Image (cartoon, rainbow, N blue to C red; front, side, top):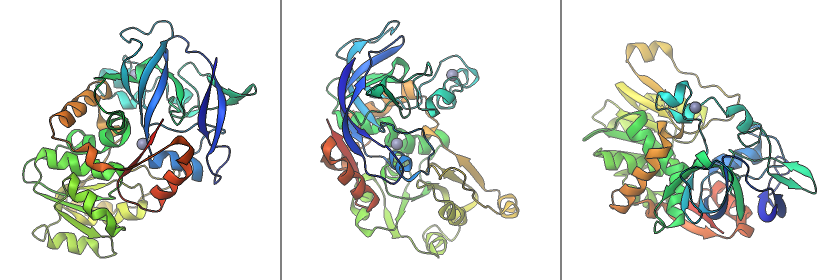
Length: 367
Ligand SMILES: [Zn+2]
Ligand SMILES: [Zn+2]
């Protein structure tokens, strides 16, 4: 058992509290990580607002990179000192979905993880003997974390930890939406609603795939520069008649691919209008639990439009994290251009204030 300084959520709509919590040693198939960097992702904020229902108190943080400090029993293939990107959807490797190369849909541990536990259905976190819950089996907004061995993807030690962290969620979700969920290709037209971490990564993925017309849409005009640096060829401030403006920029038809990277049902309903007949709307932003989106079945049929969900970029995380890191090293994914500011763990509330306030680029907490 060690003590670790961590951010805690005690109740909805209350600030993060920085506290020391007890962290038990790793058990079978688990490892202890010294966390180096954590991306400030909207999904953690959904715990604060209650849009994602979760057991509390919990330690959030699911976009992380760190170093292996200690191995529990049965952790084959991992070594102390390795740098790892953390996968927030650990998988069993042998179920129906894992065998079909869709590990993010693995059924084996979903219940335990969404109950706030590690894969054996128990927590390693506590304060004065009371259970503190994990989030996504990672809880990496903390100096140290005990995580499933299957969440650890080893990357070269010379890759900056902030780059590794972003690959752990935003980059894999966004780039994967463009190249795995659908296959954006040369000369395609692409629209991305939401120029946050996932949206910027989708823009990077579309640019990497060769799309020639990449339109970013957001409500904050100061996100235009970072969108351009990630590969957007155009930037439009969101408005009610935006589908008309998008059609005017896509030969009057609408785009081949439209991505909704926010998770807002009313924007999803508007985004489908910007898709050309025969084109595809990809939903990669996570909507609040219990919400519904209303599409016209008649128009989907008449115009042969497709709507696809995209979870974790439809990625094979074990392989794709490394592939994305290699593309970064080759200069084909300018992940560094997304990062706008670093914070300490003590500044976590400021970091989320800046995120919710719509400041451009991805924020990273360094530990
Ligand atoms: Zn995330
Ligand atoms: Zn599985």
